[in-house]
Image (cartoon, rainbow, N blue to C red; front, side, top):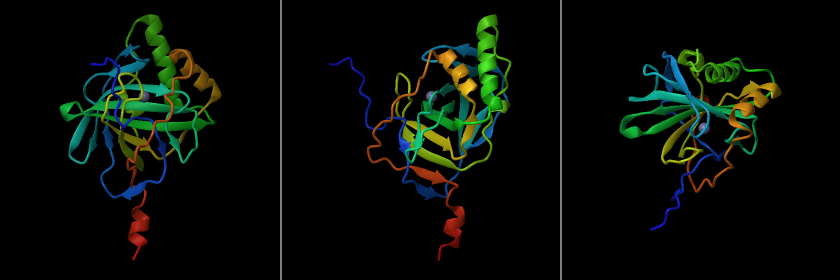
Length: 212
Ligand SMILES: [Zn+2]
């Protein structure tokens, strides 16, 4: 027996490219619950009370926590981004689902500032973050979807990844603020795609309609 972790062939993050358009359902978020605490294992994250979920078709996944990575972990056709925010959910049979948003350097982002401010204040005062999940609710979007893993220990598989196709912005000052809370950059390197299919959901509807 070995004590090393068997990571399998479905690890995250990956470079998103060569996707297949899909007309399947995209996640829709029904968020309304208060933050309960900040946890620091394995990285700083704001936990949420019950009451917020995403639905994909008939399946519901409850919001557990939000955290972030700098630089972003996923790349799109080789393009790198400055930050990535992960909303982690859990569904039936403990199936994990993450909704991710990548941010490129640019204007300050209001939601990221709230994450920085409330994580900092919560830890200084020892109180729950004053933030409601509705502030983090991902708007309707098209999504890249594939099956991967957590990108921090224990690197569990499978994780259902839904990455928003809309790229946000983040200021350099905010990147530094996020890194101050994580003790520096905390992105996992790209992993081998290993033949996995990436779907783009809601991306090809018009093209498909126009095709003969
Ligand atoms: Zn993450």
